Length: 254
Image (cartoon, rainbow, N blue to C red):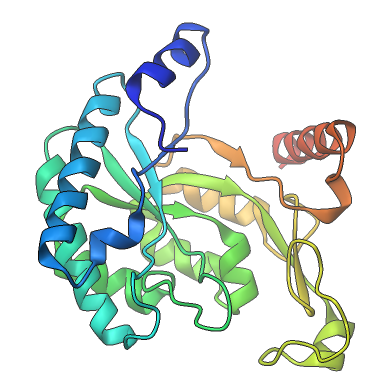
């Protein structure tokens, strides 16, 4: 979470490595249409980044979510460029990076404005700062129908952190419900939709051996952080432990 430096210091002192810390919330206010609110949020976020980065923790996680879901994507994208551009300028030179995850956000708006190759590419171009990077999570790409390998071929050099999570496309669900509307009668999966669900690495459709090779060739030397959102391994401490251990064993095997 967006913990301050004084809460993070004891974890580091205990010998733990930290892959990422959340960017100070509310993320949506970074792209507020209110210039004063935007500026105040950026200043608070930059102060938090610089404070935590002084401890050697340099990845700050966020999703680029608008304050106004009803505005057009083009309008919200322009506000994101403005707000995150200000934030990038404020933290340049600190060694910190904002690692943006391509979660498309929730229905009905799916309002995240940086989650596809089109938007990552244009966002990096317009902001023009190396302080912006990618939190690579192939599970979101798979569920959106975007090829993670092609994504890494284009953006691998911008990956600052990796979530080890997968998505399984469910052919029967795809036949029954399609991929546009929610089901009328059926309930969705606990961590997913009607024709897809999140899984631990190796139990979905992502090509992990190929992805790991591409990440290594692109120079990535960071963590593979298991984001446990698999309904087969949730509901109890024992189940979650089994999911984490199975994830580790799979990743070590490829």
